[in-house]
Length: 68
Image 1: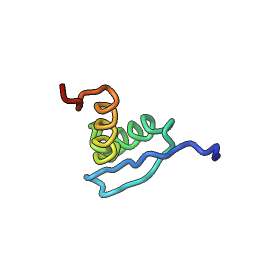
Image 2 (image 1 turned 90 degrees about the horizontal axis):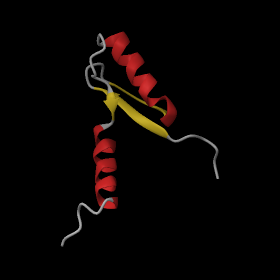
Image 3 (image 1 turned 180 degrees about the vertical axis):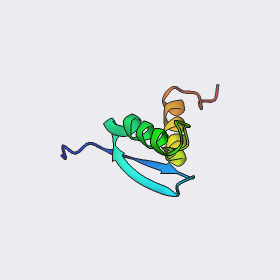
Image 4 (image 1 turned 120 degrees about the vertical axis):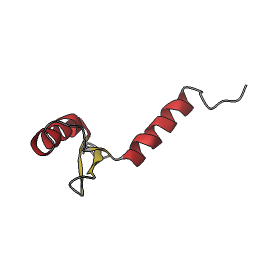
């Protein structure tokens, strides 16, 4: 088993950049990029495809997709 921390894809459509950062650094990396490049506006974000997939997994885990 690896001791490496999982990485999360970060994308910025304005800059045309994509990178991966350790999970524990996501908030700082987003703040640093957006503060330095976009006057603090939340442009860079966690990859939207990952956010959608995580939302689906959470909803499934909570039973929101279950039929009555």
